[in-house]
Length: 341
Ligand code: 5GP
Ligand code: MN
Image (cartoon, rainbow, N blue to C red):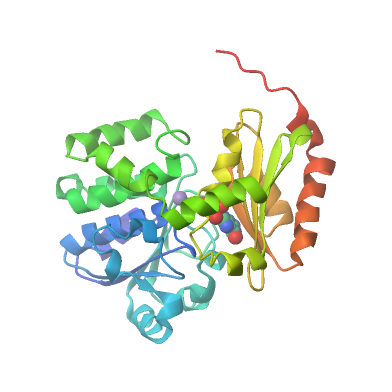
């Protein structure tokens, strides 16, 4: 970690700390933020977690979920807290653009800034940086950060539960982005009392009747399979959003279902928001949706899970996505998948 000693020295006395994570926070963003919050609170710091946009409601059972401020609903108050911060943590994002309305407040702040993240090509806006693309999740990195701080004996149920949530969500329940290093950490977490069955149930069996019906609708009415290209696209218009009262988060995870078809290698969820079209892409194996998002849709993420957003008419974005797939990735997407075990 870059400038770790400096940060450790700074944290030897109580500080006013703000923890931030990316817009449309997922399990890793929230788990890492609450995990670090519980740990630093034990060390006597004053901490506030501020997320740019609405929280993932399926995680509302997490300890101190209610204490997290949502910037878009508390602009003045959150801005004041950010102004008074001595240390700001940037968790699970590598670029100020990912915190939307909060970017200039964090960017212009004189606080000591710390990035802990696992996305590629971190931007240079922090004083101390722990960036590792080989980590499954930011939650894994928070665990390793606490280890570096000699804080393993401080780990308790609230810290571990929070970190486990992000490990579960970012690995899809240990299906991807795993490593021996992660499983060693998870073994330690289990020895320290983590209830894997309970947390897995809470995280993955979390559909509401509404979101379950929406999933059925997406698959039956909104999915187009480009079978020749082993690609599937779900498109959701503004009219759908209004008709079915779709809120941010209701479509969480829907895109992954496309990859349950054996031959599918690339999956897209394209949603028409009020003033922007959002893409959420997933892939299997070596096919990189990170490349597609960063080259064509102002976005990025990870090789197998990326997102982007673009200000163009909805139908143009759908056409552009199809054009990119058929014109630029035909060879990669149509070559035969060889499975050898
Ligand atoms: P999701 O598809 O679940 O919204 O996001 C998947 C991953 O893609 C996230 O973990 C994040 O790393 C990345 N991502 C999503 N949206 C954006 C975006 O607008 N810009 C960038 N740079 N990355 C994004
Ligand atoms: Mn993450």
